[in-house]
Length: 309
Image (cartoon, rainbow, N blue to C red; front, side):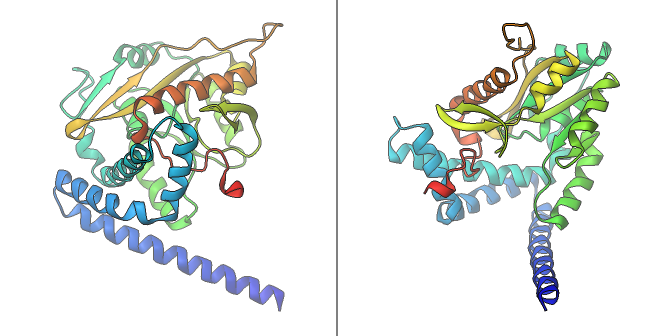
């Protein structure tokens, strides 16, 4: 009887996931019928109305209150509402990515996207060696590996698939065609990335995700646990580590930045300090988020506060 009930629950879950996925695919198909700029604007307007009515909005406001206690409630509401507009744009931009990626590798930039640090793309491409690029969920972060591929730079990106398997399958298929090599965040991912670095190529990591078991660090002065994977890979391969980010600019434009390699902290013995490196990553991401707070995903439970509300 228990096995039968379990099968029923799993079947209902699969049905729910399938229905949610089909609804999302239908919405994206309708958006695809519109001109890119119009579809993105419409999606943003809808999200700015719907987002503030969701439970995730309350979590976003709580996160903002903890991160920016000096801001007024009205300021935090404005950031959260702008965030929903940004997230809607991110979703709509994904289906028009071929129109957005107008980078000319020979010219460095072209209209919608400007690239800062082109010389680093070129130097890493022309002098192959193991390296790590890290970023955060800011701006349209999906553009970074696509831009790297445009410059002929081979980067294997680690990503966390959506929980919905039907959406994850569609997303993985679309990403493979534009972003080069991808590694789902699951068992064996660290080993796969290590093999990439061992072969002399680069990997890309998002470092601002919630992590249950990690280095004890601070983010906006609040306790968090940070994934030590980047630090451990860098320690093992003694490779360069580059910060990179995407910034959303006015008029539907973007700036992609790849910064100079950072100097990783070391302990008294000269070994790379994993916890201090994790903290350094948090500090870098925090500086980005403070500069453009509405372009970060505040509805993400980075501080694991749901259980304390």
